Length: 95
Image 1: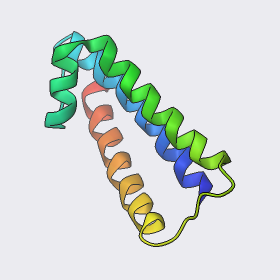
Image 2: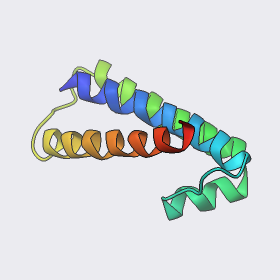
Image 3: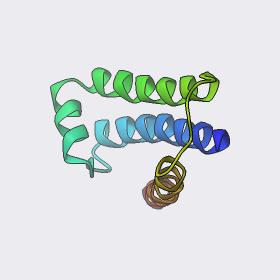
């Protein structure tokens, strides 16, 4: 279970960096309306928020009292699949 959080944290941070540069150079648009608002307020805040969310996921790995009960494993798995699909989309415009 903890490896999924590490995977999600890595993908989230990578997504933030790729999205930041993609939007800065006009290659892509943010697909998440909430994150688009954050980006439009301040692109650096967007990056900091993505980094903070990744740090939060990493912190959960080390919290011993955190319980991985339902539906957390299932939701984490679904999020991993969806984030992997987002990364494939990113690769389509990078390549």
